[in-house]
Image 1 (spheres, rainbow, N blue to C red):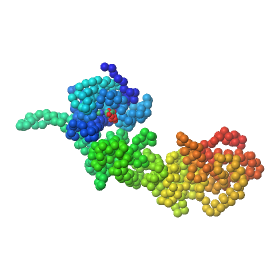
Image 2 (tube, rainbow, N blue to C red; image 1 turned 180 degrees about the vertical axis):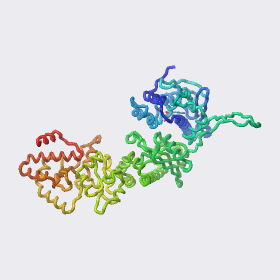
Image 3 (cartoon, rainbow, N blue to C red; image 1 turned 90 degrees about the vertical axis):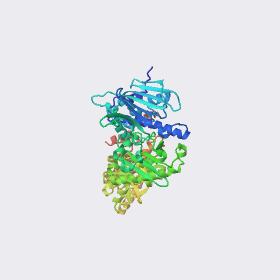
Image 4 (cartoon, rainbow, N blue to C red; image 1 turned 30 degrees about the vertical axis):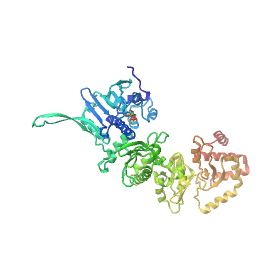
Length: 629
Ligand code: ADP
């Protein structure tokens, strides 16, 4: 029979599995049992909605069996089964919805050492069988069909599919277990106690009995010293879903193992919330905050949602309605007995019960995050580094409708504390004299530190919040105020640090030099909306500020967007009235107006460079500098 080749990415994955150095080879069993359980779910669900299956609930089973002589381990189920075509598509390629992402994550130079992460991230399921076996045989018959097919593969050289006999519907997977090597003991997968242990650890909650014929030796009936070996079908799992157990019966490790297995993560979660709600609507929720963002989290491919169960039966893998966008990073599940089983995606959106649960969960997640911030700063900062941007988007999105929910959860780097701080903490440190919350925007904290205005604000003893994410300033503007304190961008023209006397003096200076300043503005054209003297710069000669809502930083962010339509901040060139350059400009206005034009351009370019804004005509700048030299 002609061998068929695996699709390229499956082949790569297969290769990785066969040569895996993955330390948790045991998980192959979890993966195969999960598939069997899903197949039973599918049949069970189908039978409920169509009233067709002749099986009763108790007939659904997963059977394990060991054949030591032939070195085989068999996992079988009487679930929905796979047709010839399904065997092809499901096992000949990576069938997971993540296959596209998988393709982009494995590149040809992929190093062995990163396999662990890839395996962890993608939950490669069926293929993990090749970590422990030389040959895998799958015999399957679809429920309701009388044909059966056999899929067989010894690894990378391909697979075959052929018709065969099978007495009843379902799937039987036979693994030819590898021979022991110096480093690796494979015999253990033919040992009943090891299998029992692995099932207990990873698949205890599976809702169908996982059976294994276990051998034990016992006293022969009616004798006193004669022993006999009895083989008894033994159920290995307790079948109680972890979320239905009492909290005090579950160890942290169990919570973590469940998380990693179910949500394909290779790291423990950062935080676990297990809540049982009784009342008009009763439900159990098991929620996890991952310790790192999934690789596709900030992309369009990412799908938020919680798994939805009704009385322990999975209804939907990812129910998006249960999570608001700003908490889309939460993984987990909800089990509610009050739902109808055949709820569809369409009716979901209008389901009252779901809405109530979603509202409660949002509150719960918020309060858990607040607690984490209060009680475990380190963990919270780790969380925020991974998902903070999502919270800030949450403040900005939908015209700020969620800003009150989120405002106490966001952190910004502080100039005085040199670490991320909350707005509450900032405000608690404000002195009587300080009227507004200062913030500054830039690529990095180091670059913001170099801004002339940052110097000025810090020297007054005021703390500055550093905004280094594109979304930051948009979020801050959406907040408008916190605890009745407004926000001030230190790069705005409205930055006001002067005393009344100083202000009066600057105002006079500007009036006296109005003609000259207007002349400079004319020379710069529409690059700036005005040129003015300022007293807020201590040593620096110039700075560029902006007027109104749209800051220079926002201009940068917006014009980097795909269909930017030439948004422009209203820039103001501010010149230090106490700097020697001020007098020089005044002199030039009297003696050499052409030169003053060049000076205006030079100062403007300096302002741009300091603000991190690109210069329209660098060649002109170069020419002007050379002329001066
Ligand atoms: P995943 O389970 O993550 O989708 P797998 O590689 O483990 O990926 O399995 C691929 C597909 O093969 C499954 O989605 C399922 O459709 C099918 N499959 C695997 N095992 C079984 C089984 N025991 N019974 C029926 N279908 C199965």
